[in-house]
Figure 1 (cartoon, one colour):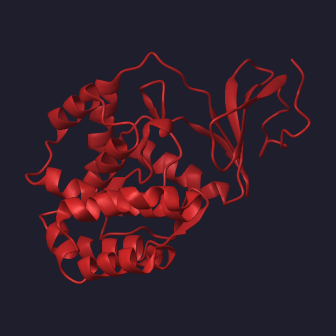
Figure 2 (cartoon, rainbow, N blue to C red):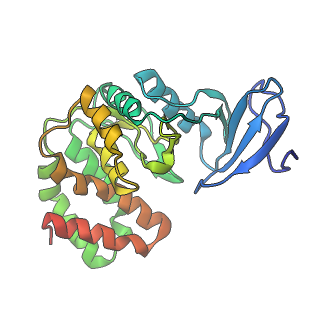
Length: 267
């Protein structure tokens, strides 16, 4: 197999692979599968953002009990992780996700800002979840919206949205960018945008892009059942990732934003 000329040098003491081939599906980074001289299969990512942020997120989730590939090497823009596959076990994945969510932070946020895809994600420590979500996950995107949609959402942030999100919520360690494309082999979590937030955020995004597999949800609730009222909060929590998609991919996602506002009765 021919080694692609665009394969970056591997960080640290990792040797030159015997072969490599491009992988497809990533929206931001160039991704390759490679085999090291000792026979290990790895995934190499060349990212335009700080690769250390993703490595940190993977390690944090792994230490908290979620199944993630091991980080083998990282430098400023290259990340090398172990290559993982099935067999799938969505119930076990639900167990691991719920276990990771049980790790609590000192407040909502993270010890530093990071990224979601190619976009900056601010994570200042904040004492309450509604304030954090409004100020750091919604307000930064209002300028991307048509005037009337922005006004509707801004009116919601002044009362209805924080009131809805104000339940007995713990600052859980969340994946932060959990959709079906960031689950490998129905077993492993990749590409996180970690922070401490409402655990319902991960399941809300998973429901938005691909749906929450029943076996994963069953496994999750065996460890930590969801709080009452999660069904009503879910469309509000989905606003963050929809706003990210509006900024990244354009007006095609505006209808999904307005449908959430309509469903919540926010005019």
